[in-house]
Image (cartoon, rainbow, N blue to C red; front, side, top):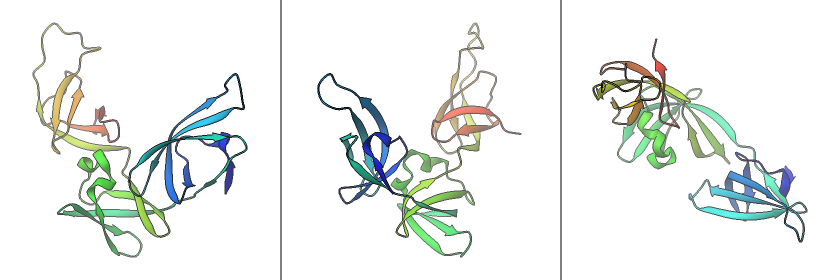
Length: 187
């Protein structure tokens, strides 16, 4: 589907110069001279390159629709992660860097959504929030106010986050995967 250069929004997937790009940021600019344009920061989903492109309102670009499919994480094998299609039980190996920093939050049996382009996986989306156990938490410093003071803690997957002072080691908590922030105690 073709869209005008000024209709581009963050999160759009575009086909541009033979590549598949995900829009990270957009900024609409209307200079004193000349026509308005959209400054677009994009990341190539195949090789990870980043670029900045100016699109005028007269420019058109192809908006790509990705197929999504549910897969279950089975195990890690070297630098690859093995996922299984929940419908066909086919297994697929994907490089760990396709997940980026979120790979640390993968848990056995976790369901992830793979975005596919021409039957080729180009990104993996984990659930927004996961449960994890605190294995190490600093002691509370007396005199700090409870409202704004957070203390560092280490999760069972090795990730360091900040938690409220009342959270102790051994507590199960809910963590936002992509922001690496404390959400609340697990039920």
